[in-house]
Length: 412
Ligand code: NAD
Image (tube, rainbow, N blue to C red; front, side, top):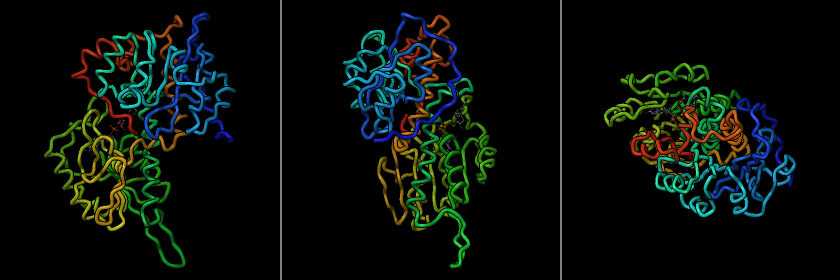
C-alpha cells in the first residue's frame, strides 16, 4: 500500500524555540481512535519533527493512521516508535492524544479509564460539558485533561483552533454532498441544447463551516445567498461572492463578546422562520450550520417550510448532532420528505480523514508546544488564558461546571 503524499506544512510558530530539558524525557502516545466510524488520527508524521525537536518522543499504536491514509512506516520514518497495543501506547506515555475522547466518545472512550495513571495528561476533543462526572474522576486520579473545544476564539489561539479546522472540512464536504444528491448541476451552462440555469444555494449560519460552504458552492458555480444572526458577518459573506439575506429582525444583541451567537427566544426564532420561508422555498440547496454553543441548535426550518420547497431540493443539516436546524432532520440519516432530501450527517470531518487529521494534528502540536514553559516543563496549571480555559480538570473549572458556558460538540 502506498501512503498519501506527505504534505509539507509550514513550521509551527508557537514554542519552537523552547526545548524540554534533557533527562526529562516525555512520551506522547497515540492510540487508534475508537469512536464508531472515526477515521481521523490525532497525530500525523508531518508534525513530528517539531515535537521531537522540542524533546518529545512519539509512541503510536500499530495501524493508528491507516484510516487516514498514513502507514506505520510513515510514522517510523519520522522517528516514532510503533507499539502493538493500545495498552502500551497509553501506558508508556505521559501525554495521550485523542481526536475524540471521554464524552466525545461516550461508550468506547470510557474503556481507557483503566489505562490511565496519576500524572498523565490527556488532550483532545472531550465534550467537557457532557463529561463532568468523568472529568471529576480524572482529577481525583491526578490525571489532567485538556479539552480543545474550550480554546478561546482569540487570535493567539487561532493556530490551535480544532473547531475551526473541523468546521472547515465539514462546510466543504456538506456542499459536495448536496451537489451529489441534487438532480441539477451547480453552474450556469450555455449549451447547444439550451441554457442550464445555475443552482441556488442558501447557507444558513455564516460561521466557519458556513463561510467554507459559501466558498465551495461559489467555486462550483452556484448562486449563493447566506444569512447569519450576527450582522457582523455580512461583509465576510459578500467578500466570498454571496448575497447576504437581510431579514428585518432585531438582532442587535445576537452576538456574545466571544464572537458567538446568543440564544434568542422562541418568538424571535418563529419570526425568523416566517421571514426566511421565501428564501428557503426558492433554493435548490440549503446548508444549515446555525449553532449556539452549549445549546440545542435553533430550529429554523419547519416541516411546513420543507413542504414548500422544490421537488428534488436538498437540505444538508450540519447542526444535526446538536438537534438540527431543520425539524425533519434525523442525525446520521438521509430522510426524503415530499421529494426533498434532508441529510443529517454526523462527524463529517472524519470523512475527509487525511486533511482533517493534518489540520487537527497541527492544531494539537501547536497546543503542546505552547504548553511548554520557559523551564522546559509543562505549564499544566498556568494562569495563561489558553491553558486555564482548556484545562477541564482544574478545580476552578470543575467547581464552576454548572455555570461554565459549554462548547459546541466536537461532531464536525
Ligand atoms: P458556531 O458553530 O457556534 O455557529 C455557526 C454560526 O451559526 C455562527 O456564525 C452563528 O452566528 C450562527 N447562528 C446562530 N444562530 C443563528 C440563527 N438563528 N440564524 C442564523 N445563524 C445563526 O460558530 P463558529 O463557526 O464556530 O464560530 C463563530 C464565530 O467565532 C466566527 O464566525 C468568528 O467570529 C469567531 N471565531 C473566531 C476565531 C478567532 O478569532 N480565532 C476563530 C474561529 C471563530
